[in-house]
Length: 66
Image 1 (cartoon, rainbow, N blue to C red):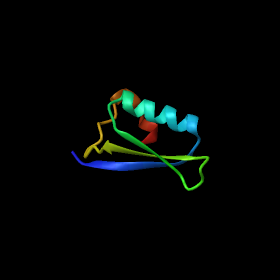
Image 2 (image 1 turned 90 degrees about the vertical axis):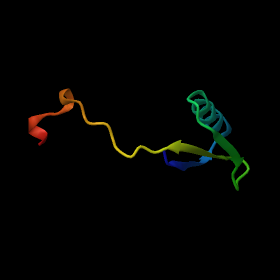
Image 3 (image 1 turned 180 degrees about the vertical axis):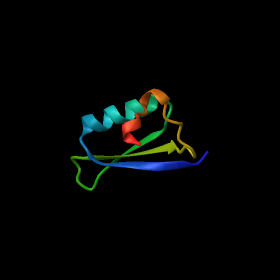
Image 4 (image 1 turned 45 degrees about the vertical axis):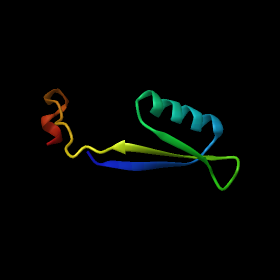
């Protein structure tokens, strides 16, 4: 499965900590680094990509929408 890096820029310390904890709880590796501006943090997370999306359930389809 292919993996892609996602980057979050300009987060405060509290936001960065919550985001890193969320990804680690879900089993992903997140790296936190200090931004150019020392007040902010950057987060880089490597997440797997899916080749195909799951089909939409029939209960969510409406004939009016086409």
